[in-house]
Image (cartoon, rainbow, N blue to C red):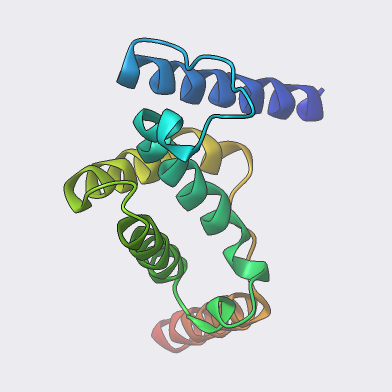
Amino acid sequence: MKTLLKKAALLFSLLLIGGLMFAQTGELPPLPTPEDGVDKYLPWVDLLYGAFVMIAGWLSAFIPGIRNIPDKAWRIAAIALVGAGIFLIGGWSNGLSLIFAYLIATKVYELFVKRIAPTPDTPGDIVRKEKLLNKSKQELKSAA
């Protein structure tokens, strides 16, 4: 039953994200044809950036180099910064809209996705949590 509830909540989150996508532009994109380029989907670029931030942030524990950053929030910020650089260099979006897309994506993650499937811990995160737990246990023993 718990698995079913998790799947239902994840589906609800995806539908909510789809609703946010539709609300940003007010219309669905037309079906692609072979002659279409990337320019046809520019109104959706900010949403794609937000989805990139959420997905890459969730997978940050598995990306070599990024997983060495000790704090999850800084890992996600580093990924978002690299992604924003790619979007800006490509000329697909401007900085202000990417900042708002980042803020919206992190808030959607905090409110919905994190409750269903939080970002996995790296081995370094687990060791750090165990050290903090042991330290707090020792402080409790010494205080008693």
